[in-house]
Length: 116
Image (cartoon, rainbow, N blue to C red; front, side, top):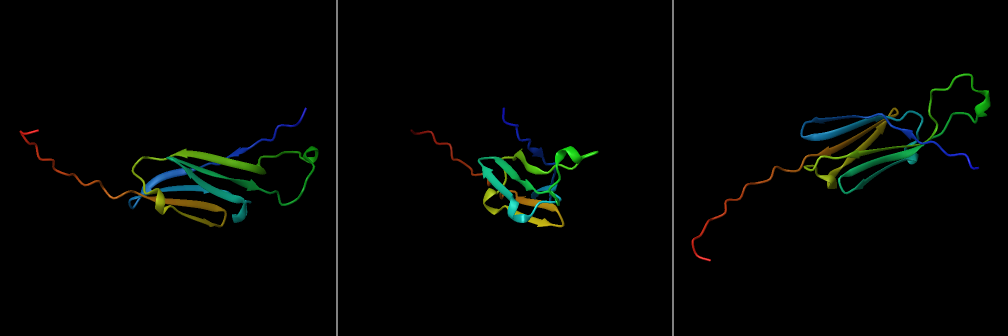
C-alpha cells in the first residue's frame, strides 16, 4: 500500500483596508518559485511546497511541529472585487495579496412609460 502524502494548510489573515481586500499568510521556508496563486471564478487558491533545510530521515525526529512539503489554501472571495487587478508580494517569508474593490455600481434611472 502506497503512503498517502499529506498536504499542509496555510494560516491566513483576511481584512479590508483602503478599499482593498488583503490576504496575508506566513509561508516561511518556501521559495518564490514554489508558490502559485490561482483564481477560479470567485475562489482564490494559494499552493506550493516548502522544502526542509536538510534531508532528515523521519525516524530521527524526537519532536516535529514544522510542516515540510506541499501546502494549499482555498479562499472564497466576496463578489465586489476587481479580480483583474490582483497584486501579490512575497517578502521575508510573508505572502501578501491585495485585491481592489470594484468601482461602486452606478444607479441608472429607468423611465416608466405608459405605452408598450
